[in-house]
Length: 104
Image (cartoon, rainbow, N blue to C red; front, side):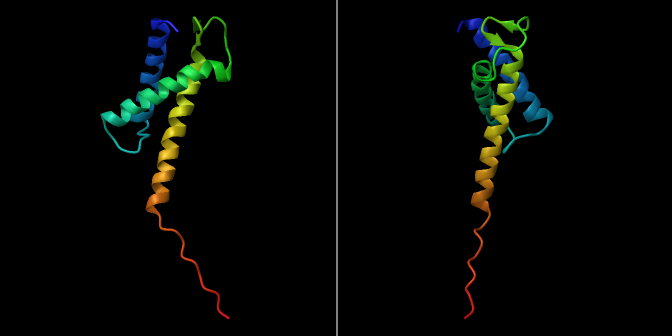
């Protein structure tokens, strides 16, 4: 991967993460660190987008980075990461259901 491919993936991740974090308020905690963590996770998702989802639309790419699979990979991985953290956080907060004793 060359430096321009890295920058293209980074720009995709910054935009998608910004839309999710600031536009849709899709986060666990507000703030800059939460946004930056989404950018890092989104970059990984964008990088995995083309190898996992395939090469879509030959003319809409830069080198080995295809824009549509990169955007979808970034979006999917960021949403998945936030959902996993929300689920585990909710599981820690919610008390386990009490076991009922059987009456004999």
